[in-house]
Length: 129
Image (cartoon, rainbow, N blue to C red; front, side, top):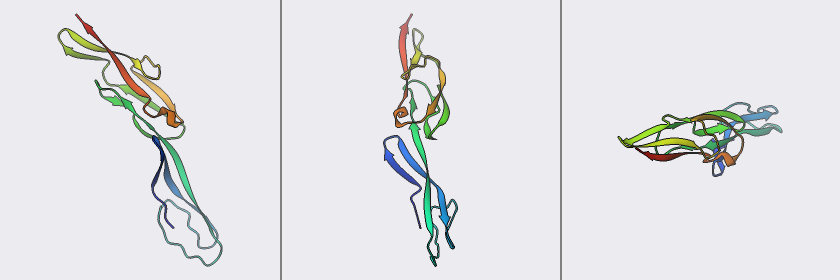
C-alpha cells in the first residue's frame, strides 16, 4: 500500500499524510506512507490525513514572520520585524496596519480556512520632513 505524502487540494490548502490505520490479521498501522502487507484474509486499511492551510505573511519593506503551512485550527503568531523603514534622512515609511485590520505590528490568527491564504500584507505610508 502507498499514499503520497502531500496532496494539494486548492491554492493554500493541502492534506498531509499522517499514517495508516489497519484492521484485520496482517494489516498495517503506522506512519509509513508506503509499506508491504500480506493479505491472507479480509483487512481494511485507512489512510489518515491532516488538513493544512497556507498563511502568507508578507511586506515589501521589512522581514516578516509567521508565514507557512499550518494544521487546521492552529493559532499562529505573525508580525513584522520593523515598523519604521528609513529611506533617507528626510523620508521614512511607517507601518499602518495589516490587510486583516490589525493595526499592531504583530498579531495572532487562527488558521481554519483557505481564506487565510495571503491574508497579511503590510501597508506603509511615506512621510517627508
